[in-house]
Length: 342
Image (cartoon, rainbow, N blue to C red; front, side):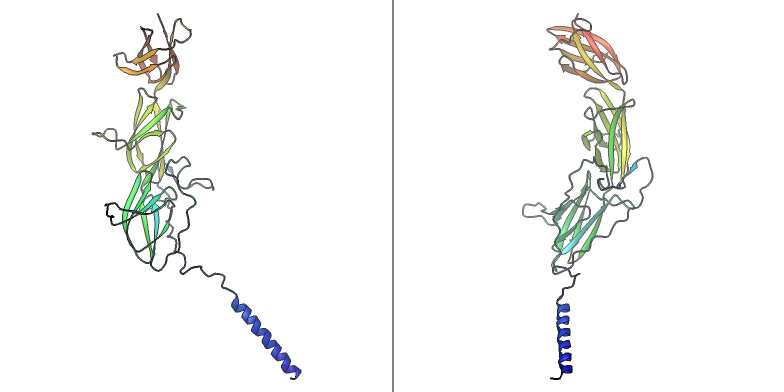
């Protein structure tokens, strides 16, 4: 074979090997599995909330901030590490769920609990829970069929029947919730947490009829999520007669701060043999109004009672003897009432 032919054949062999190498390389952007992952739900635009006396609940900046509400929010814990949803097969569909505080209000970015039930009861008559998710915008892969979706955010909830096919069904829920945070004060002094509690009732205190509380023993500083609307608060400072009632209005998508102002003081009771002496143990106490109505009863040497400002009488019983004296309570003036055993 002449040299020119041998040279040409060598180049053809090299080009064939190079083409084989290039074709064998896999495509870098291929999806793994039978189908591409489900399309995420469309973002709900966050429009500015209306102006007003309440504080906007727009998510604060920074990685440590709780989206949507303050870090003191007392709601069911949100799972941060959930297993990824599998890609749907041709016999499955995707239920894409989102929630917002209301029309033209921001989307809810934290705290929603989603529960999906079968739309037909079982033999016992119960609707079986199919899936639960605590992420803000879950994509739930399910078999086609009928379901009932329940969404809850604090004390606000919504339910809706859904029919799922072999595609993505998007459902947006309106959860018109607002945050309510309460504190108590005497004058300009903040009442410490643990000394004051709040009960929340639907409607106004001036409406006729008995109503069960929507929430009881709410601690100062906690954020309670309630449906937007009018409420009244019963604030109990201590366990005696310092009670304040307040009507308030909660707006969806906002945090409303309420301050309940009490006119009261902390009074320490003390039975002594001589003025300025040591307190006598095993003493039974009764605090009464000038008309004789019992406000509170205690046992011990140094009981403390929180009383509204006004006039009172205290009765001390010790070793079969009864002693009493009148006293006054002034707003914000804590003090000691000493009863001499004579």
